[in-house]
Length: 377
Image (cartoon, helix red, strand yellow):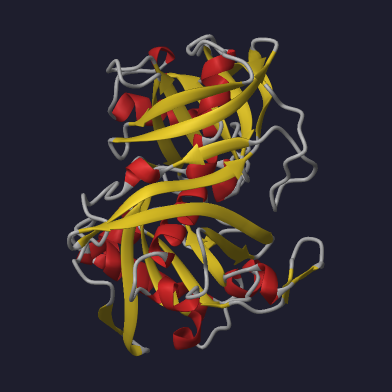
């Protein structure tokens, strides 16, 4: 059987790595497209040995780029979380880290005109129906790579890309507070009643207090991923939230068919801890709260970009679990995650009974690693 050749680019975007594809090079939406993506990544296979996937949720991501469908945006972008052991591509949400690669990719591919020194790229995310704004530094007609901005979880430094997700409130459910409450109570088997906050900005998330789970909020990926008890408990809360906000009909369906979204984070007050990668001390005075995020039913090794947006927004909603943990945060919310600190600029205002998000911007870096063709059977 002859192999098929498809244009592709591998990009490190934020703390994730993804395959960037032109929509016109793929089959139309549906089963044929999903099967093509699975073949590109080598899924399902625990090692993804026969494809481009990196056998990790943070490197099994796809960005599908297309010309704009409306005049008020510069480019269309569809995100897919590609299953590793499951023959599934989850299109139910977005990835903030991968989003940071869309602007540079669009500029370098000639989809967006480069304007020095900074090109603003308005990105329509088809998963959520929301517009993201990327501020991309450019040099010599291309997206800049070199710079002095560093992000926790990525070695070295690069050109800063500011990502503003202020327009993504109610990304999936249509409401910043999908249940209408700043807190809800779940009855979890084996645990009992527990308070949660469900917030939908960039992607829906469910937040719980680390202390209510018998945790500190300082746990490393190895500590959580090595505990079947903790993984099952956290997934049961996440799955129940998925049902509560209408993303799945049953908890079993949430686990099997919507493993990526909603995301879950357990949070705690600011405190000292060690970066699990380098061992350096992160001081409590340098963060506003600590948070550990679950993604694809394991702990995220850093912190998701959309999770950063949602956590930052939740910190500004009085009465949420995040707001209580980060009660002293100003316009800059500093989140302590396993590998360091991520900051997000958050501005909101009250309009009647509603809180309106005016800015939710965080810095990322991105770079093209490889461009060429991927061959699939």
